[in-house]
Length: 413
Image (cartoon, rainbow, N blue to C red):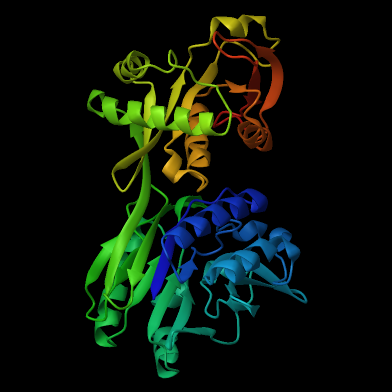
């Protein structure tokens, strides 16, 4: 059996966008032949106690149906973090979707003092059994309470999974605790932590897996989303993690081949947005030289790229842009290697671009998209990019739509 631990960053209170991100991550886990995937504490809303009452849902809410559909169609068990409601009570819960089985909820039983004003404690332990392996869950604070683990172990747990949202100090404590207790009770322990800001702290990642001897067999970093997949038979764990960084001149040949692959893939479906004269090797070389080409890596393999700069095409002057021209970031030449497409990697690159722009106080982002590439246009529309007009570029039979999105720079909201 393969158990996937997801390390994710949630957008504060943005349930729909977080669901979309979760679905893309589940699809990656499916492609990696995972039988189970577990997300961090309150991953659908972010760990935001003050928002929990407003955002809480019942487990049968239809917004979760897509998780059940993925579970049914792909024989995968999915555990997501969500505040749930029952009568007048709000709980810190994990919603568990199993193939062709009624979904269940596990609610955190032992609450930290800071959580008591916002949440009630659950009353029972939940287990799932897959391939005769019994799995128990703990949510953050309670997973560090010895009695919680012992109770699960006494009821037959073979594996214990902790879904958490922990700071740097909290992770240091957790790593020490899980190492000791997995060794003492001869039980593998898996921990899924978030990254990014939660409530009033920075969640520190370092999702990890300990074997039954208490040995740390692998972990993720502190800054990036990723997957950690535990093979129960081999007792090993593989990292599948994305990083985005500036490209180097030495990356030129790999990157140019990815652009060629992207061009060929589009042409096979009748989309001729790139030509033999764009993008060329010299264009990519110049992007790298100027430090404006950012590369997407999956486990150190380059799988995509995006150009982020203030350079605007001459043709843009004919467009009636809405937002101030003085501080504009422009996206050029976004590409994902075709063999890695449809797994949310283009979204990861645009997420990075938007965070980059906000950090540097840009007021808007601009780009152009080929009018015949309807899938890409819809992708940007869903992210609130608006069409401002169209331009023509050489060697293309159809126009490009110029699109724009307003940004609220950090510190001004």
